[in-house]
Length: 308
Image (tube, rainbow, N blue to C red; front, side, top):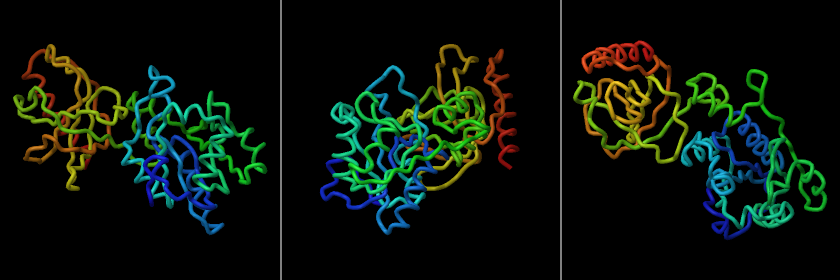
């Protein structure tokens, strides 16, 4: 899959494509249906399939106070789209100029002039253009004028309701991991860099990796989890992950920490990919560090059982 990072990277316009358009954060089962429809149409017509998306959620510019957490890193999103069979991915920078394009200008200057779209595939609730004035009804009325066929894909349902990024975020925040993964169509994985912490885990005999959140991904609800961790070199380890405010230790602050089972080494500065397999328990406050240490031993044993 060829990746165009920014509209200015398209030096030669794409010709006669089938284009899937959307934000595609999470690339969940509904997004997958849109992209797969574009890929199928392109193959049937003997032309390239193109996925058009943005470098950030539009809310970062239009409503920064309501920016949701992300479900995928950019790298994860790109890899998933490639696995779906797209020939090209166009990542437009969502800036003021782009947000101010009228629906007509968006179709004319981007979808037609740059992407050469002969077929446009979107979700049935798709909105675009200045003031979100463009919608499915608008696209239907301009098909003939701009010479494209429109495929509007109905939402994919999960538990009787449309699968959506909003529902997935809420499921993760409430630690309903299986529900979130059912709507994603794959495991949810968080990517974080290992940073220096207070080394409390090492003091208690369980050295943990403190993770930052460089891509502002959704972090599941507070608690202790059994996890699978992948290192940058591809090695995989089971582990126990603690998310929360560490109430037993006064002033410890909020953190996300991972203890890798049967691992010995230095992880500082490395990027870890964490899959949440099972929530083991809620976060609790203990009367002493010794009681906390005993509970950590039980957590490690429970994690091993959950991962067995």
